[in-house]
Amino acid sequence: MSVPFNKVVLAGREFDYIRQSIDDSIAGNGRFTQLCQASLEQRFAPARVLLTTSCTTALEMSALLTSIGPGDEVIMPSFTFTSTANAFVLRGAVPVFVDIRPDTQNIDEALIEAAITPRTRAICVVHYAGVACEMDATLDIASRHGLAVIEDAAQAIGSTYRGKALGTFGNLAALSFHETKNIVAGEGGALIINDLALAERAEIIWEKGTNRVAFKRGMVDKYTWVDIGSSFLPSDITAAFLYSQLESMDAIIADRRRIWDRYQAGLARLEASGQLQRPVIPPHCEGNGHIYYILLENLDARRHWAKELAAAGVDAFMHYVPLHSSPAGRRLGRTAGPMPVTDATSDRLLRLPLFPGLTDAQVDHVVDALDTIARRT
Image (tube, rainbow, N blue to C red; front, side):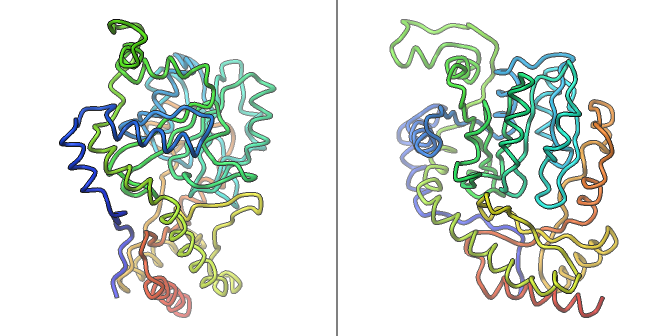
């Protein structure tokens, strides 16, 4: 049996909506863009939501909206994708890398305060694998030091912290609809604006620095260049595909949770025997089934298990090379203290196949393959 790592699954009406978009207008901020934004605003109320070309550009908008500039510092985990840092480096800021927790692989909130300097302007948390960072502690630190909080919620749509949706805690948050995420559009993202005082400027930045959104609402008789900005909005074709996915979001996430739960139950014995560690979701958090990973003993073990899984027809992959140890990270960032958990996690973590429609038989094949490897090791 062959089990791919990821597979894009259609919700059902993608092609129908794309045809409607072509008949209407494929330019940005069209009918399906408005439908997607309205759907997301219902889920993240009372936030304002703007679709973007990617989570990367949503983060770049966050940097602009928080007026991050040269010499400013932004605290973030090192165990994340490059976009988390690039968004702020592009404004001349310095990413300050903090170690992660050994249970959730999220930023260690106990280390944030020690990383703050007079140059710190924001904390950017990353909800790894769709599991929440400790937002109560993070928001408390940010409040006491007058810092903005930005959620890199690329992996976190549909997840909650103490019953509240991730993406609703920071001043701003960014979502991803890349083909590897829970809700997909090939490429695409969204900016969630929880600080509504930023909403008007966000629309201007989103529309290339113009007040075109106000013009379309009939609030001004012509639109013109009023601020910095760029072309952050996606084609309405992208939004048409996305809207079908959003209509089925609850079912998609429920299916991913089913798969996650089956892995978690199936691998309990291997964890009990010390062969691997399973992921942890704290009791006050609800995940979205985005990633199922295992932690192995060390780098050599991870390579061995990945090779054996491949021989069994199972695609499994490592994840991030830590930013603090990357060439650009060493040149452009600053490391706030030792990073033992980040370094160990990068060496030990192996992601297993997970996508909507993955069958029980396929999950069981992966679990059986892991059992076989454990017996041989």
